[in-house]
Image (cartoon, rainbow, N blue to C red):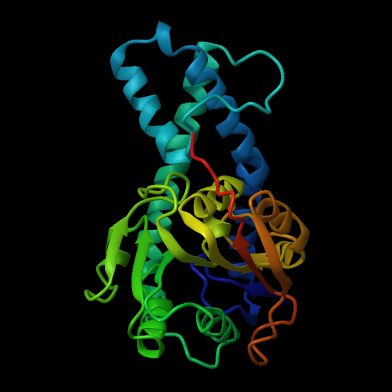
Length: 305
């Protein structure tokens, strides 16, 4: 028998379990797919597609450019990636990358729709993730506008509403079915984290709980979260640590993180206050699985060019 750690793709508690041979085979199939579409490949594909799409924009018909433009918007590109070296991909290669990324986007959407009914609608106030969010929010003004990016069904927002009834809460998620479960007293916006549908400096506080791991370009997601945060505003992120990823069943496009890399992303535009592991949430959640970062956006702000 093989001992694996099963972790939901939408932030459900990690539950150690002895797995059957059938589940082991399923995990092996998943990792075979990872070889083709692991997160590092996805980011490389996305950058190469964006470079090719902008380079060939003038030479393709309107219908092709419209398809490309929609994918570029989904991935958060409004210009070619500046860090890529070498010539842009050919027109045929660009179209092939677009087809691959669109297939992946549809697969991500299907996973989120599939998992909706299996996830708990509530989270216990004693959960370390919940305690961390409440502690962070306690330092905000009573009337602060707080946005959760990748809110799912809004279980964290419901806890905040009970504890801080005067705060203005907003939830954003890419899945319309999830947003329907968010409390109607809160603002609900459908959208992706790579191009947020908000103007610069919109919120006093933003937080992300196990949503960054699902972003196909997590650094861009952090950039966007900081863009919509007001100068002096505060951000909280909770996600999983990379050392556990190889021991867990998860979707192949997921990327888990080290404390240092997310700290570096935040430090470009904010003063990082905390970068640490969360306590284990009881015997079912291993120590070192969850990480926490908090930061305050610098007064200089962050322009969205």
